Length: 319
Image (cartoon, rainbow, N blue to C red; front, side, top):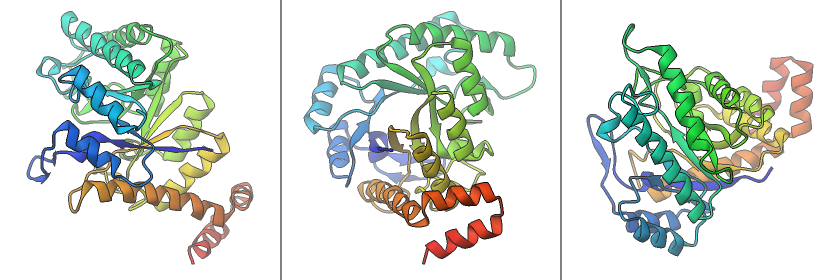
């Protein structure tokens, strides 16, 4: 297992919710400079189109950091044109725009030496019964994602799922539907971004979902964070669900998964650079804790199947 750690540069800037602003806006140059200050960061994740108002300028600024790009995050939810959906919009012109966004993101990823884009279709879904035609929605999603992914075979398209927000019910809302979409498309360059917080809100066991995606060779990318399984709070990794964090790392190791972890963590108190640095350190420390617990010992505990002995061993290892 060889994990690489990426800073989502959007989290270096303005952070806010419906009621309060926690961090001020920063221009792209400043956010990239902050990302460079994050300890043990191996790369960065920019967002298209948000960070690419002037493409040539953005490309130069990113290259000047000396940090590789883990993935280009393609935003097909924020623009007003996507108000009634992106890939599932009833308007064919809007669906075309969503496809073009992904194609452009793929071209930018290639330009930056990245191998992947990640896309979270949060605006595709419904809020009420009898509001959306589910058959048409799914077919439109398939058609659009297939066309986009076929744009170039050298760039992977990673689908990030979430059960809700912006829609009350999102079309690609969990790991099962994500893998079903991958199966339906049948394209080797389409896979899944597992956001830990989204898996928790979907009431999934993150390590189990990670393992299933890994068995399918569809686990392309992981966004690390945490929450209390009731809302996507984007908290520090392992701050709530330590055991889930350890179990995910355990299965990454069993799968010999060598990929990027990006940190989707909000700084409501303190400094974003410190928050991101702490996030990476927490995960690296969790890896060391896993070594202390012993992978073979943990596997033996699983095979024995007696939780009392398993947790007795794990808690003793914390001392």
